[in-house]
View (spheres, rainbow, N blue to C red):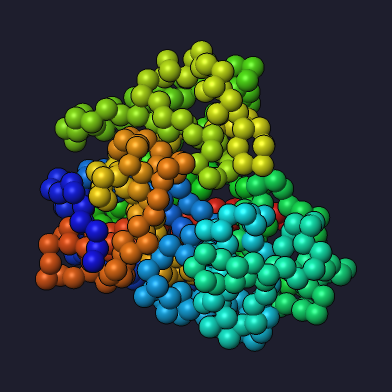
Amino acid sequence: MVPRLTTALTGPLLELERKFIDAAPEIERWLRGKWQEHTPPFYGSVDLRNAGFKLAPVDMNLFPGGFNNLNPAFLPLCVQAAMTAIDSICPVARRLLLIPENHTRNLFYLQNVAQLVTFLRMTGLNVRVGSLLSEIQQPTPLELPNGASLLLEPLVRSYYRLGLADFDPCAILLNNDLSAGVPEILQNLSEQFVLPPLHAGWAVRRKSNHFAAYDEVAGEFAQIVGIDPWRINPYFGVCGDLNFNDRQGEDRLSAEIDAVLVKMREKYRQYGIEETPYVVVKADAGTYGMGVMTVKDASEIVGLNRRQRNKMSVIKEGLNVTQVIIQEGVHTRERVGDGVAEPVVYMIDRYVVGGFYRVHAERGKDENLNAPGMHFEPLAFETSCCLPDLCQTPDAPPNRFYAYGVVARLALLAASLELERTAPES
């Protein structure tokens, strides 16, 4: 069963979902045309927030690490979508090298890698896993809690190619977000496809670039559906040249926060929304919910205590935060069981292949849920995100999930534009 949402949404989002359902043919035709002009990333996942009056993406991950949390019934969708992606890149591909994160102790993440290997092999590819870890000097088998196993092997680099001792792949799939930079062993590969491209990694990528592209996509889409773009698009600002430990840039950051809050308050007045506006300040590069702070008044950012400054100053791989994105906070009205929840939608190529709820019993509706103590509801989407049901109400699971899928694909399209615009010159 689909977990019941304990908060019954009866506000404007029902009207937004109805617009999506009524305009479904136009939406699908418009998206189909966009994918003729732009190449989708190989895969991606989108964190959504459903406020009842607004449904918007708040993060776009180009190296998704939770395929193990998807409903097993969606595995055929993953296989079909991956086949489409591979056919568009190299129809004659036979061998694929998968390079994961260096999380050999994170068994849940490794189950994600094993799931990737499983459905990629079903596309007809010989898939093997190469590790960037220096201690992996020989094939190393790992047994996983769900009964699956994984074999990590040491990488071997030749002049222009990367593979294993007895394995020369056609393509390399990264499930490593390159937060620490691009390792030398991955640089200057000119004879193999690298998916996603290296500039999709957090060593180069910036969230502000993504949401600038999303702003364009949302504006064009809103005209087609006949809605205010704000209903699917969070306001944002950027502040750089920061040093949280030395309090450098606090005043500028405070001013940027206030500018976003002013715009939000005006929208809340326009729509009669009684919630308290807030923004989320987060590192402009990076993931894993690190370097994130919720702010309801600009004055809160001035004079942070040592613990708060330490939290904001460093992200994954110990990298210092010098630039942040100030993103409109989107309340979540959804709950699963006793926890506040937000949907996460997974895509391969241009297709939605499933999703789940991220749930946190100790966080509020205006807080970051990507934090220790969260858990996932892997059977959340037992119906596809691709097929609305006109015979049911707008908030029925197939229709709500269709709305999730539409907004997630808008974020995927924005990621495509983002990667095109930030690609390094040949």
